[in-house]
Image 1 (cartoon, rainbow, N blue to C red):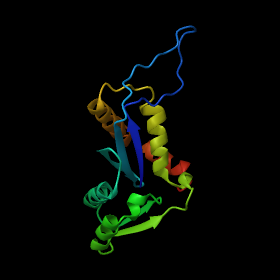
Image 2 (image 1 turned 45 degrees about the vertical axis):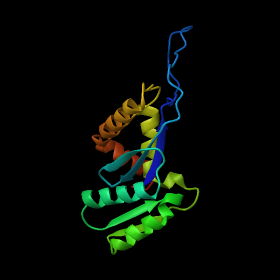
Image 3 (image 1 turned 180 degrees about the vertical axis):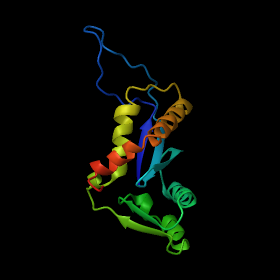
Image 4 (image 1 turned 90 degrees about the vertical axis):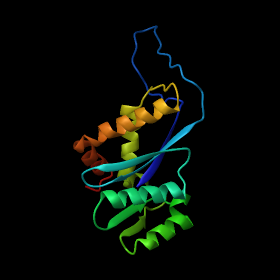
Length: 166
């Protein structure tokens, strides 16, 4: 499980254009942030979008969403984000009576987290140079591109292989 964020400022990537016709991105320089939290299974990934920063209440909401979507016990492997260690998260996990087991990734080891590769693909291949007119358009586009990625099971396999866990 991991989190990532976007803002209304575009994620810029290298592009091609005819010589002398430099591409220009026009966008509103706003600081509104859209955060995404995702978890991955062997066959799919699940995500939720939140305005602003992800904190403990959003983590609990996402854990509840995963628990509803996936039968049986859940093994959640995540980094040491402060929101993961919050009192609210601990209380929620304890209330699940063993249905959710938590493990932490080693510090400074994002390459072991396959969700990091979701973010890399998403930002480099699905979102580059996208200029949202407003926050609602950014949210719609983010959700649409993540759902499109969900429909490609070979991508999920590739994320596990990139993390060398498959």
